[in-house]
Amino acid sequence: MDKEQTNHILNFLEKGIRFDGRKLDEYRQIKVEKGFSENAEGSARVTIGDTIVFAGVKLSVGEPYPDTPNEGTMMINAELMPLSNPDFEPGPPAIQAIELARVVDRGIRESGTIDTKKLCIKKEEKVWSI
Image (cartoon, rainbow, N blue to C red; front, side, top):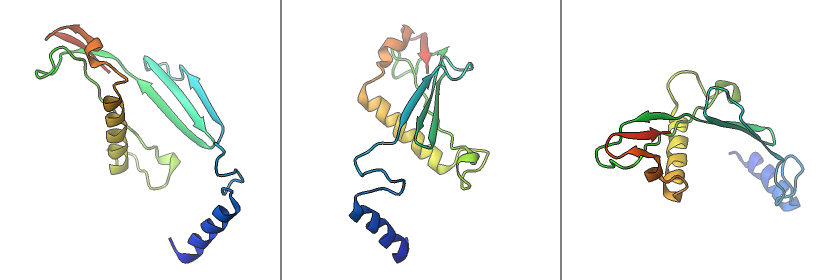
């Protein structure tokens, strides 16, 4: 960032406002719409100000990993759409998408929000893959 941009940001901070006129402790409007996609078993569209995030959950039955025979599996993916930013291109996931998926994956796993043992259908044979 050049000096002019830095000074511009500092000027807003000194006034206690953001670029869009909100105070520093004010949130953007949040809207959650569930059941957004017919192709996913669960989905939502979350709008935070002008930012839109789509989330979907797919389910399938598969085999457990050998080292966790009584636990289901999870795979987290992230896509950064080309229409959202000129730096995002179609094709294989960009490094930013891979890193985002890793951070979300770690957050879900370490929070214990999803008990992977409850995704076990039959030990060593069938589990839910989400």
